[in-house]
Length: 284
Image (spheres, one colour):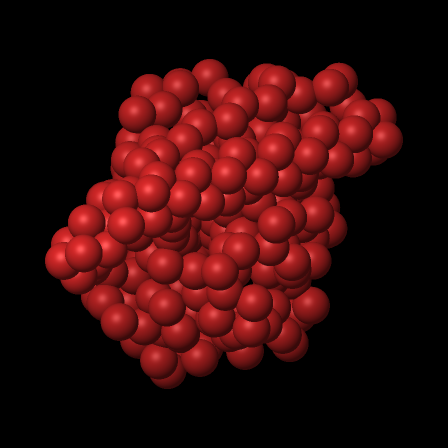
């Protein structure tokens, strides 16, 4: 896994995806790839319309319909190339090297799955090109979260490098693995972190938080705030982000506690929909 891959399309989140991917790429010193995938389900190479034509229809109608679909796909590929070129220029304008651009014609999530071994971190917008409403979640995003095992940074329509970030922690083995990855990664070395547990206000949980803080400080994270909160995971985390003006949420996608139920259950979509800040889902 070597590249930061950013999914580029014509959605309102494209600039934010580009900015987020550029920030990640420069911070962890990993090459950036801008990817435009033309979904074959929306833009087929060939279309079989014979089943929709009544007996006696002219044969040339099939040819005209097929040509129209082919022309539509060619135009969409051209538009995608222009979107990639614009995103690459935006990266260069931010002082980074010109990134590699790739264009694929296939089912979107299948395309990402084929590239999985090359993905160090995937950057996607909360809304895709087909979802324009501010609080919609793109169907491609939901499918990617469920299908892929890579780390995914999901951004709303705006992005800025985080000045403070929330790291959700539940003391599960998976959460501890995420903690260690974040502790060692250069991505948040200079970013103050808020280590937040949603659970019972017990001495045991406080001790777990202090041990988790020590993992971060031992790796050079000198600005770590710990918080033990009660309430529903979703509303509690979002309220904490708002109260402390945080810029990103980091959390593991698997575990064996309330956070696991939260992430793999129906409330995943609610968090993504309501969060005003990007969310980094740690899948491994």
